[in-house]
Length: 579
Image 1: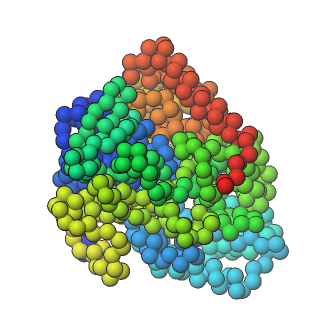
Image 2 (image 1 turned 180 degrees about the vertical axis):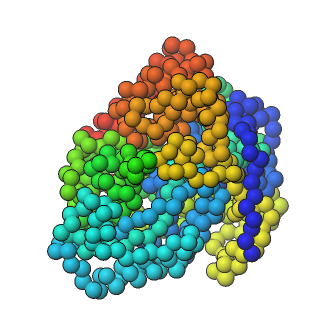
Image 3 (image 1 turned 120 degrees about the vertical axis):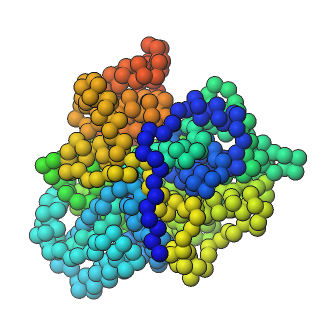
């Protein structure tokens, strides 16, 4: 049985921080979610969709952690097949199809080239058979769900897709299909959809303590809004704080010792000018001397079939260090560029890098696993603590909806007094549930901006706006119609309009210059130096909307410039070995 797609009413639903904070103070809730990354907003949407009184608080901005610093892919993961985790790949590819249906404006099908690069251009038959078998396994596990199957291509065809590769070393390749998404915009869209369903959602609202009843059970949290504190009352609290989950768990026992459940793994990406790579589709390249591969993804389609930039990543290394804005070090940059330069002939240097980002995967700690974080499972885990706090950890961007569904199942059990249904269901039951109708499920809930959306010609202005806002792009167009100057580039050379900054402040709860430049738009990730140069103009534009005086404008610029200075310093610093 296939659920018919459902949607929320298409209009600009309220998403005002001041009103959200008022409701946090005045109302009580069934569930309070801590964490505004993809997992937390997914939990909030699922809970609100089931009719639960729902609140979500995020210490910084939505998607300010890992959820804006991923590989920006909705995929199953070929390497998980190599590790034998067929079920994880099946689950992810099933969710990929649902995301394509529920958020077609955000999630786009993306062809991938798996080139076969050898020393002499010849590939052993045994290796060719193994690669072909892996491709068929990926299709059969769920790749077929988006209506595309892999195909083998010869060396000339592979070279046309990425003409900077050394032709003499190309033996051929495979093309398969996955999907791409702007991760930060997906998070924001899910959060806004949850708000449209009645959830109270607030950024820059940091939990400073838990509220305990006489029996030691957690019944809410104290939240610092930057202008005072609020005691938020809730029957159930969900810890969806990602790599900060252990810090939140410390509030459960009022300073008592806790076991560490999260093992952060750092993933680094670099952005370079597209002309240095010239790939018209994504590619997967091997890392010399390592058992990893990197993605090479074009970004910013133009009408003539070219692109603005290409980004390359991701690494997967054990990490101990600051959780806020983890560093992209000189060693990280060297690692990625060595892999890229082994696959292209253009000689990309650190001076060519226009943007960097580093994110931390919140992997579930497993002391019995091998030393490499790459070998840790990407499956998620839902647990219930002695104080009643429900924690969700692990998982992938692609599977956030199913992670949220499992978490809210545990919330529903807690609210009803039932024993929590934790742990993995048996395989037959999982497969059966896929085809059973489920009341108030998010499986077919279309996200804000999806209703009425249709594809526009690649590279056109309509496509650029539609791919970020869906049908809500009409609000951007209305701003430009009222003031044509707002249609000018926000940052010269980048595909964002000045109207988008105003829209972010008015409808997307952006409260800082950094929010706009790094997450509501991706200017900072694409071209950091151009963005720094344009930052004063953007700050003045936002000042009129957010009521900033000259001192506040100066503070906003200083905050963003500190981020840039920190990234520059990190890029000159070798990595610190993990003990």
